[in-house]
Length: 363
Image 1 (cartoon, rainbow, N blue to C red):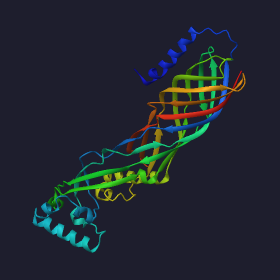
Image 2 (image 1 turned 135 degrees about the vertical axis):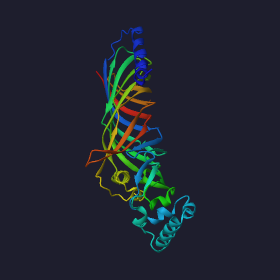
Image 3 (image 1 turned 180 degrees about the vertical axis):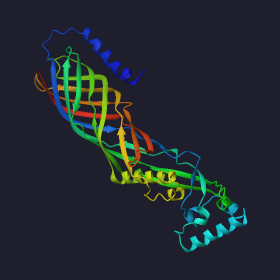
Image 4 (image 1 turned 45 degrees about the vertical axis):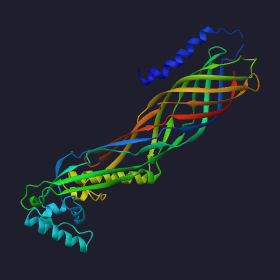
């Protein structure tokens, strides 16, 4: 059964009860109210799935490589003892790096050098997004089918919701030297693993802001009787539709993702060694785009109204919207070529608990 059907079914069932209640009283058909909506998302951050334009296990040119990355190899001693040439190479790189931490491996060993690259084509990190609490003006319009059952449209001023980042996105790059050129082939099998920090969402805190449009349609059953009971509790259910736009990404996160786009492009350009440094420069002009999809979810609500006069009333309610979630899609594209460098997705669980206190008028 689809999410939409599950959400609509309770409304249909509740409305069907209206025909069982014939009411002879002169109740008011319409009611409007305005008040304070406090929205408290209950969802927690989900993992983020990242895919890039790099082919898993693809053989890419190494290009420029820093000595410290070379010397971090998991099997450095094995490579040192492999051949006389490999021993000379390791010793020379060790000596150069001892003198200068930014020492670059001589082109003698990197010209024509290739490596099989793993770990940055697709991976998942336990990092994601959570929505903050938000307050806004709530508005309702109700139509009473009879004195017991009403249909209510809930809206208000679309709030700007702060999105908090949780966790770090890290690419665990793994490369194994695999060259056919004579000199670089002496270090074939050199195994380098390096964790590359893409972005620290938790350190940025607020990573985005989005405008949320979430109209809801509910059916309510009201206990008591108009003109007799001033205090009338109600219960109800319905459906909510969520549309999210005007998303603004934090500039720091945006720059981190641009840098990640450069990292991917460097691998594609035959500069896998430079990619390990995540320098933030390449032949590409990366641009970041973030989209969120629309969502439907069921609504359950309970509350009460209290009549001040036969027309004016106060009302309060608590509403829960389970399984209210959407997906944020992040793409990094090279503006020069239109090539998509990075495609990432994360599920954003909202599942809000909402309180409402308002004043209304019947007519």
